[in-house]
Every structure is written in structure tokens, then in C-alpha cells.
Length: 219
Image (cartoon, rainbow, N blue to C red; front, side, top):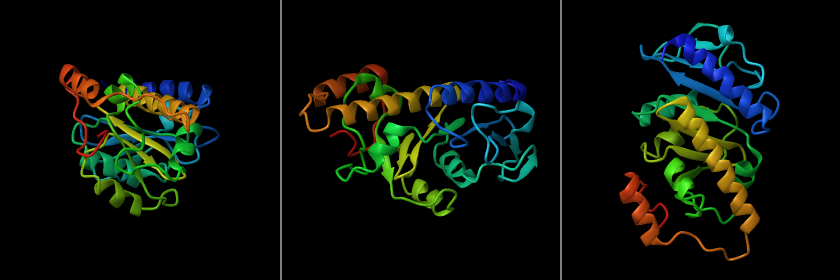
């Protein structure tokens, strides 16, 4: 995919996420890794609903701004995922309501923020880690992500929102949408003793679709 196509795709998918209410105001950010090792990222204080392809921040492989507007303050978050998830080619971070709500619940297991409710949640997201609260843009969040050792493609930032990496931007967007829907299901079913997928069903999905779930995830 060319850089021009990547710029257009960031704006198209960003607008879709914004228009469906998945990240309000100027919240959320998207990045795509380019063939030369640099990457594109959405600018600071920019609404995902009105991005300009020409004004996206262009960073070199070391994360320095090359062209475009000043980048999102969440560059350390994106950098940590690229450094620990070798196959990652895109990262999406949103402030989607149900995922944020889930991150605030006291019973959430940091190793598996959601139980195995649906096949598509496991297929798109695997297991989701929960990391402690850090203020937006705090470089310490990068250390928290690095502490996961690349085992998770989907992460919840406590009291903040989800961040997901993917081998394409479209895959990352689909995964973060699935995470939001799974969080919504969890909140709807909380306290109702629902049936989750059994270990045998999880094993079947893992074998059939070649899933790699973190150790301790969805036991």
C-alpha cells in the first residue's frame, strides 16, 4: 500500500469511527507503519471525523516529526506497540464508551479483561489486557505496554480507552469495533450469570483459526 493510499484510508476509517460515535470530539488516534519504517499518525487535537490526508503527521523510524501537523500526544503508546508487536502495521486508540466503562470495573482481570463470550471476540481480539491508569500522553504508558511483552494485540487503558494493533489498519479497526461490542455485551449481561464459551469450544476455535492466546488468557 502506498503512502498516499494509507493517508486516505486513515481519514476514511477515522471518519467512519467518529460518525458512529466510537470516539467523540478530538479523542482517539490512528497510526500506520510505512514501508520505510516510518509511520503516519493523526495530529494532536484533531477530530477523527475531519482529518486532512495532507496534514497527517509523518514520523521517521525514530518517531521524529518529518512533515505535517504536530502528532498526537499518544506517540509513546503507539511506539510501544510497534516495538513489541513485530507484525503490527497499524494501531487504533479510541475513547469508546463501553470499553472505557469496562476498564473502570473493579472485578476486571488485568490478564483477561473480558471473558470468552463470543467466537468473534476471540478471533479478532484474542485476550485483552488491562493496564493501570496513566494520564494521557504519559511516557510511562509505554513501559506498561512493553511489560506485556507483545502478548496482547488488544489492551484497555484504565479509565481511558482501548488500543488495538493489527497487521493492517482495517484489521485493527475491525478488532477495536469487536472489542467495543464485547464490552457492551459484558455490561448488558453483568450479574446475570451468562454462559461463556467452554474450554473445549475455545480449543476448537484456537485449532481451527490458528489463534494464539496469551498464557492465563481465558482459562
